[in-house]
Amino acid sequence: MRRVILICAAALLSLLAAVSCKKAKKSAEMSCVAFEISRSESVADVVKSQVSDFTSLPQSDDFTLSLYNDGGMVWSGNFSDWNTLTPLVCGDYSVVVECGRDAGEGPDKPYFKGEHGFRLTSDTPLQTETETASLANCIVRYEFTDAFKKCFSTYLFAITTGSDNL
Image 1 (cartoon, rainbow, N blue to C red):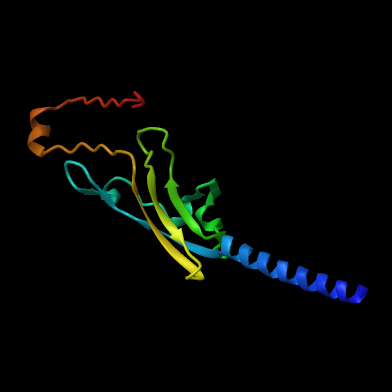
Image 2: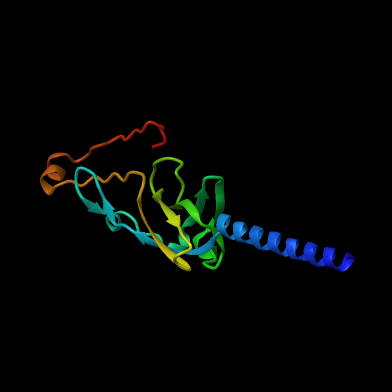
């Protein structure tokens, strides 16, 4: 009799373990993501220019990558330190890539940024997300014609911003 009770208890425990394992798999499906950074040379303003007219484009390894989900920041660090084999719980995420500091405008202070949201699913073992980073602050450039330079031998321009940091 005791043996029958032990066998029934073991069968019941096995059944409970199988059900809880299936629930755990359903609620915590995992997948991985690889990131690529596409850098944009476009500067949209009154005149269309290229970033290379003013400064050089940063390399992908110069960027900081930050990954967020509904719970907050999941990971943040140098882009080159991201491990594409890091398992993540499937769901909605947003990625932000930045290079430089968003501390204000000024000479030699380019700031590049890109961000977007994506859904990580278990359908793809390694999902690839491409983020386009473009210039996120302003560039001012003065160019004068020869006629202007002949007419005005000296001239002075002042630039001010909301931060008064120029």
